Amino acid sequence: MDIVAARQLARALAEQIGFSAGDATVVATAVSELARNIVDYAPPGEMVVRSIENGNRVGLVLVARDNGPGIKDIARAMRDGFSTSGRLGLGLPGVRRLMDEFEIVSEPGKGTCVTVKKWITRRGR
Amino acid sequence: MEVPILKQGLHLIATVQSALSDADLLQLRDALVESVGRMRARGVIVDVTALDVMDSFATRILRDIAYMVRLRGAETVIVGIQPEVAFAMAQFGLRLEGITSSLDLEEGLAYLDEKTRRRPNP
Image (cartoon, rainbow over all chains, first blue to last red; front, side, top):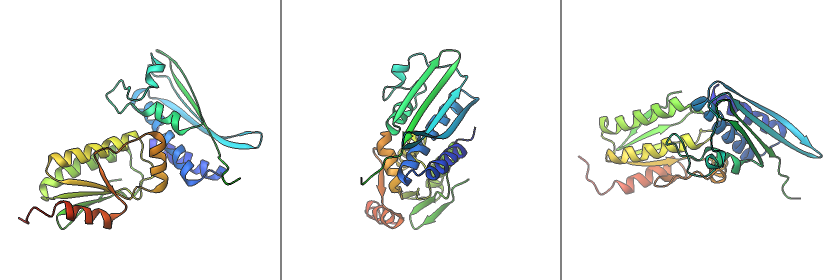
């Protein structure tokens, strides 16, 4: 997977759906982070980005799935500052802050699937 | 894509021209840390105007660059962080602690001139 290509595709889709430039950058940042988790820790994996609707709300869902080692302690991985590799340890908690909905399923030895959603915020109404 | 590094006066200017892969960022770090010595620079400007995303990896590498450049005796300024990128970084919780940033190249050069002024020209 190419991290840069993944985030550029996601940004293009976000803008096409109607996200503001700021929120499209937020989406691209989340994709960059999730794609890097796969490339660095659990290749190969896949990311799917598509538009979603709920009533009159429009948004976007990202699914990042890998068959890597999985995360033993998800609660710990979701805390700021935690990293198994000496990295910043901001990845997953940061992505959760960027997006509106966040779900993670991980099984040690089998892999991890992160699903996040972001809805378009209608301003000035 | 490799980031070109130019010398202007006592300073180096690295202008990011497109989205950068992780390998590009590492290459930029190594090139800057090496160039500071080879070109006897006092200041380093990294212009990120064209950078699409600043995620945790890019932030970490910029912090590393600033620290490594300081260890080599020069100052670093990051210039051109776009409003959307600043917005996403703040939401993410990414911090550029210990790094100076300026609005644009002009401001960055003015800052470096001021910062490195006291040392006479060799």
